[in-house]
Length: 101
Image (cartoon, rainbow, N blue to C red; front, side, top):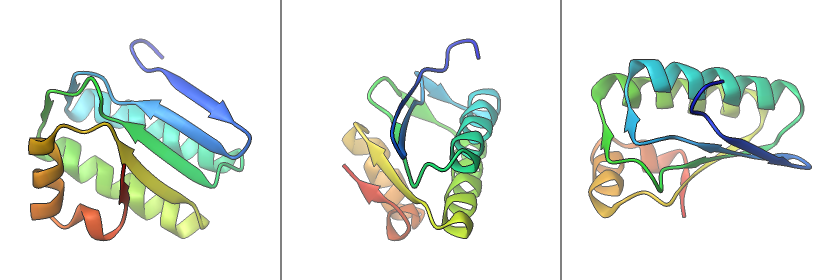
């Protein structure tokens, strides 16, 4: 997948979100997370360290990732997010369903 980095260690996968989380990158993240869950990963870490912007479609797709993980008994962690992105996640209620690291 072009522009999407994934690191997998045992049952934990780290998916790097990239600089702009929109429909295109969000769908790539969702596809990769679902694939990792189907392979047995029980923890999905979405790394937002390089992310500058998250749009509303990106948020919607993240909700789908959280739902898929929850259904499979996996946990989702958002790591490396800028404070403004964390505040957006808090305002929209995503932080009730994920760990912020």
